[in-house]
Length: 230
Ligand code: ADE
Image (tube, rainbow, N blue to C red):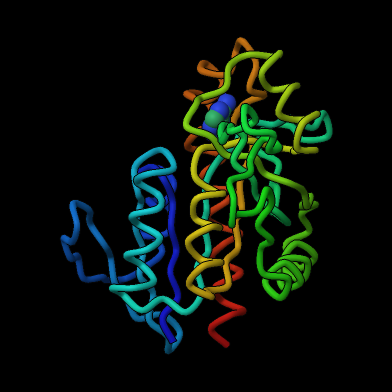
């Protein structure tokens, strides 16, 4: 079985590569892919670069070129819910594109014909994440993650996303990865650790907490991989 682990930025996959003894690097479609054997399964790991377009390309490549049968995303997010603090983990139950707007034609935000406002993450992996959280003694929240090609550093925009989609956190890749995996029938799991509150201090907070929050997320995802490879 081949399992994909994906991030958007180098910092998001560095803690995962550090855990592997050795891996093979392949350049493909303008990106680097890292392949390793782990607990008897094959892992393929990559960061996509930021945003929906690059993450679509990478998720598609992981599934179609490298044959990933499951995909786990590890990274950081901005909090919308007041319950989420820096370093806290959120597991996406559903993902949506907050910047997808053809409301001029009477459609809801996040919708295009033949698409769906929300894409659901794999329920089995969400169940496994509950076991992992228990074993690690961590409280992990579940919720809706909203994705857009925008670093949100504005209270008003953040609140609009929260109210319009019922979203708990926001980032820039989850929903595009979800659309790809859903279309290709590849079960997916999206985990994010909070790096900022998507407010006026977001860029400073992001710079300060990117690495530590990315480590929180990556450690959890590797515990998921341990369970999935058993
Ligand atoms: N990822 C982490 N923080 C974010 C923010 N404030 N906006 C978009 N993506 C993010």
